Image (cartoon, rainbow, N blue to C red; front, side):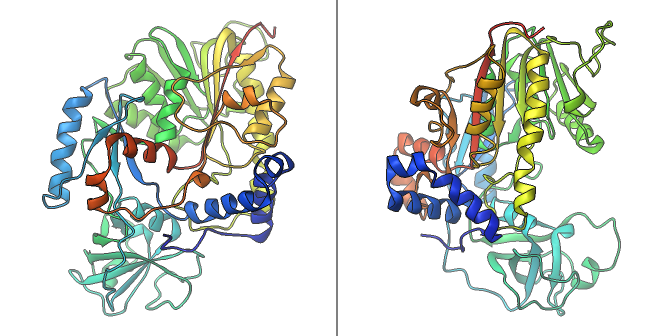
Amino acid sequence: MSVFPKISLRLEVENYLKAGFMNKEILSALGKQEAERRFETLLHNLSHPPSFTTVRVNTHLASVQHVKNLLFDELQKQFNGLSFPVLQHPDLQDVLLIPVIGPRKNIKQQPCEVIVGAQCGSAVLRGAHVYVPGIVSASKFMKGGDDVSVYSDIKGKCKKGAKEFDGTKIFLGNGISELSRKEIFSGLPELKGVGVRMTEPVYLSPSFDNVLPSYLFLQNLPSAVVSHVLDPQPGEKILDLCAAPGGKTTHIAALMHDQGEVIALDKISKKVEKIKQNALLLGLNSIRAFCFDGTKALKLDMVKDTDGEPPFLPESFDRILLDAPCSGMGQRPNMACTWTLKEVMSYQPLQRKLFTVAVELLKPGGVLVYSTCTVTLAENEEQVAWALEAFPGLQLQHQDPQVGGEGMLGAGLSPEQLKRLQRFDPSAMRSLDRDIGSLRDASIEDLVWLANKDCIGFFIARFVKCKSTQ
């Protein structure tokens, strides 16, 4: 049962999404009533967190079993001896699953209130504490050590430093303030630590703040699937075209046993530094990260390559991952999106530019994996249909492992082509209340099935380049 309202979208964006999820092919296959039910389920599920927190083990430094044992001990400390199961995913051996408990509905709300921004609120729902930069407002009498209730200002209407807020706010749970209101809003820019330590969150989810940082990488389940689908091999030269913050980049390097070369590009310098920091933290030496615009990564003059730096000569890479910039409409929890339709629709042309560069940079026989964290037809199945028509030398391949569902109807792809895609669809099932008792009664198979179904919205396509484009 939903505890939050469905995701708040501009009407033009909601209608655009609805048109995609109720296109002619879907209506013909499911009927109008079932298509409408699935779309409403999508909108409600997007505002709630997935059923599981997923972490990837850095197998370059430690075994999965060793890290699993360490994590189990850590969770017992976090939850005062409460025994949380830590499951190893059967199809993704380096992925651990930790169930999320909630929503918990009997939490008594406190008179002292802290209002946080929507992004901070989403992080709290996934196990984070409240950090000072995320705090927008606090009650005028709040002191350090006070019991406080935390709310998310999902529409961004609360003024920074306000002493009270009567607008739309969603209850996230209770915590203990680490600082007084005066300290939080003192104007000192160096205040970046925890502002409220959550003690009774609506969704009980582990915090991974500085937990086994060299051994674990917090990563949504479909994001971990992508690198396995790419299937990198030791000694290969691989390009991660839009790489920040480096979760997939470091996963690729670990799967290659850190043997070979992984080139990571991003056009924002701070994000490139984050990739380098993550590579260093995880002990991976095969990664080279560059601040560079992926749309310009193809070297147009056929002179000698310049020491492996971008731009690159055509057909330079064995495998390429294009985890494309996208509208992000599959991210969860997301209670409100203020984007205009123009913004949502702006990604398809950019994705096609990047895809064209990727095809040119890929060696004949090489593998190209395209992925997004959105649910729109235009950025997913329509892009596959476009790519197969625009590049006759590309062939759509089956994926291994196949964890998500098949592609969505509506882009004119054949049933066989749809089966070769992976779409992780938040409308696939209704949200359920989860408590410790229900976890103890469930089989491991049922829990893994739930983790596969109730995750963020995501899309994966795998292509092979059958012949040269030169």
